[in-house]
Image (cartoon, rainbow, N blue to C red; front, side, top):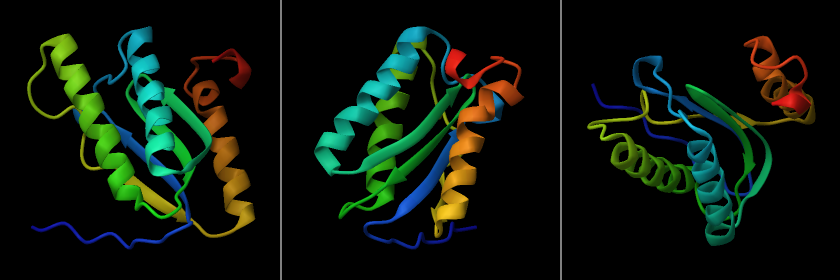
Length: 136
């Protein structure tokens, strides 16, 4: 069954998330988190987007991002491909790292943006990985 096309908006805010295939960890060691964040920052310089909130959990991630002229799919394809190549090379893994292509939800109002930010930052607390979001 073919996947549906994404609606593309410029200068838009998104909640972007994805998880490891079969809910497996995608961040195993501290350098994995660092590589992902470094790549995300490199892409910010390359594709001109703003990052508002993020949370990297062991088996998934959440990002609040605002695109400019480059579609979210291009940014996330570059991030997903480079991280998958890094992960597969480092852990001698073959095949996909992520469950599926990334998911994105268009943030259409300030209320949702605030709730999303809370959700992202409280994710480690709800998963019992930290007592306080600042500790994660």
